[in-house]
Image: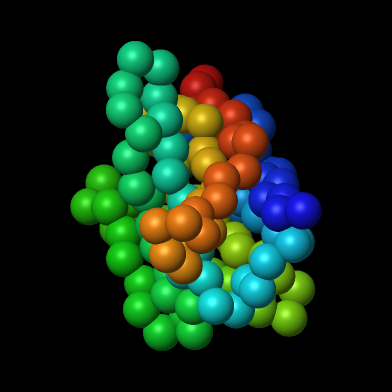
Length: 117
């Protein structure tokens, strides 16, 4: 069955870094665009970063441009989010998403990122 398993979240001080990973199985990873979303308490889920199936097209939310980097390893069926210069407002649950079509749209369970001193 389809699985997306996020890891790498945790508690970090402002200015620190974290690297999130999303290991996948059960679908043709190399065909799918992969994204990271986040949802803070009381707020709607928002797109953080997206990478195309080949890795040639990258999109970022304005709030994370220059600080976050999305990448993928098609051989390992894994997508990453390198997060640098973290701010308290980056605190949220981060979700991995795989999308090929509206029907082929999968989500992970999320990983908590907390930025606090």
